[in-house]
Length: 331
Image (cartoon, rainbow, N blue to C red; front, side, top):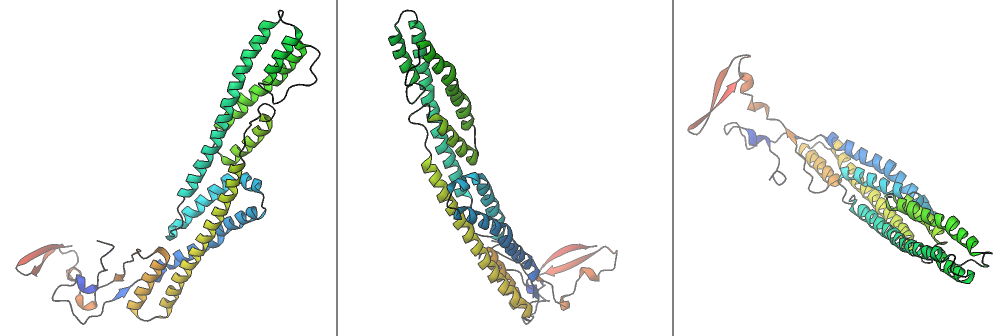
């Protein structure tokens, strides 16, 4: 009801015997209520927003997605701040839902790949431990050739290729596998990969996976591959750039339109026209649903009944409306 109602005119608050049909409404609406907002919008566009655009454009221009990965979390935090800041000016292009959605989707994809790698390596460790027990049980009752065959199978559980040429003895072969390479395998599985599963910063997670991928190449033929996710980072950066540039253009258009209307107020002598210009300037900044209420004062002929009461005197002023009386304390 408030948004659809027109603003009150002076005649709306006069007594029936005071209203005059020929009386011209005395309306005012200070353009200073809109001018500071226009100035803030221009300052926001030319400083934090433009700084973000320039920085992102420089990263995109390098055509090196690694540069984007290095600053991915900062870029996401930055665009959130920019959009939230611009939302004060009524922009329709400041929703950040797509940023949260992309961030969560990327996290899910990366963590799923890490979890799959961990599960696969855990299975390899279980198989390794079973074969190691078989080897230890075979000591003293098997030939060297049989022991070498067991150790060959044992090695391939934590390695992508077998040792060639073979060490001089099964004991030397076992020492190389179990005492040197297996601890590295367990460190990768129980420390490096587990740490990744607790990471929520995309930059750290991606770079951590890339480092783990290099180590995993020595232990697992499948490994972990995130080329598709890296490609998505480049696409996301392009989307951020377009969104920020569109927002900048919208703020520029809105502030220019509003400023043109405010400038007309300064040269107009028509009170009603000035009010409409300020109202339209507000709508230019914030949209058609934005409402401003003009200020007005009753004409001098209306008088002020309360003001006519002697100072400090408490009397009762009775105003009659038809047959009923309304009583107000005069203080």
